[in-house]
Length: 291
Image 1 (cartoon, rainbow, N blue to C red):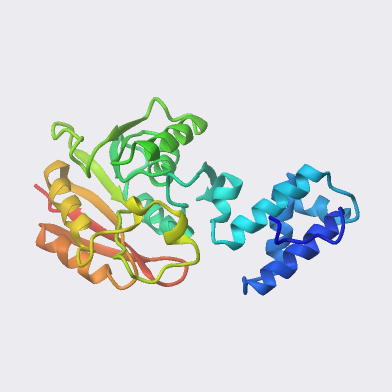
Image 2 (cartoon, helix red, strand yellow; image 1 turned 90 degrees about the vertical axis):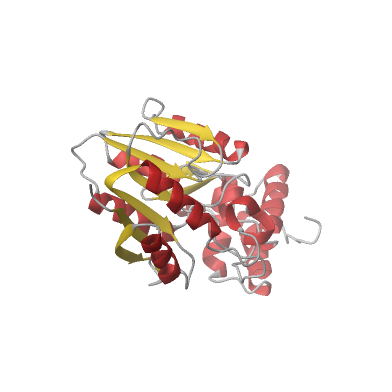
């Protein structure tokens, strides 16, 4: 905080300081970022902020903005600073206990909604639920569905619990702690298993701040074991999905064909692979063979 110098107490002074720091840090679109950070930090709509940049801020607001700017330029995700993140038209509360929901993962939602009937009862399971963005979005979009989210992290489940309450899905969503699908009984055949499992090997290139701030348990596999989470999910999903049930998996760049092959080896039919907004194959859609 002491390294950030403000020329004065006006909103414009804070904006100008942020602009200098962001430009020096080679951030993309510094003016937009400076305005966004300032408006969120002061809890003022961006349009209203722009209308009165000459207004003074109080010392505690200046200190808070300096703290936010310092944390952001150090690589901490903006969603952690703000405490929430948009995903498929809804806001999810997030913090360092869970991954930041990303627009790339919306390709899994689109695939699921295209293949699942909206007018029938369904049983869904999200393996590695994290914030809950996948399962809670699907339950919001599929009013006759019930779901269970599983996560090895008790801390992540606390975040999912909070988001479940905010979306008023307590009666339709259960939460269980455990490894992969192990907590899910086999006497209730599932219509869908969906998962964004860890798939990054240590040392692989990541975006700014990801490895430093986001939970390693949700990011990384062991060295040389990028497919291990998929193989565990495939084996357990094969035991729990009903005939012709769906399995939708998020994959890292360059791994779609490997996961597709592992799915076929495990007895699934490969249906399609969806690309994310950047054109990267992101959602591998598999289906258990019918009876």
